[in-house]
Length: 165
Image (cartoon, rainbow, N blue to C red; front, top):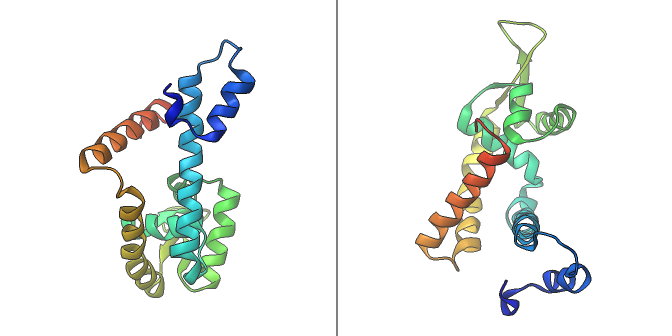
């Protein structure tokens, strides 16, 4: 690792744990991935989603329903990457705001299907271009080729921990 490029947290880890037989490259990848994703999430919530009083998770629910259409609640939770109880709470909040609706499945009355309402569709259609503009800003320091490489490497990591995706 090039010491000049290290973040203060990485320097501290090496200072405290450098004597241990650890895989510091792997640690740097995973911890920086976590730090970067957390920082991007906070930035997006503060600069894009706060105006509409949406959390990251509620935004992702709207986005998934917009892209994939109506879904069973368990499939929605899996697609968003949250637990079913968390999904229930988020959907309840969004339903209370008139952005999604729940209904019984025609095939199995025990199953609940979730879909966007017309106001929910308008909300995500208006919000997503702002969100994407912020995505472009967050990645603007990378060249198009670097963006492609980073996206490819992240896909590879995802496939290694979530086979079948």
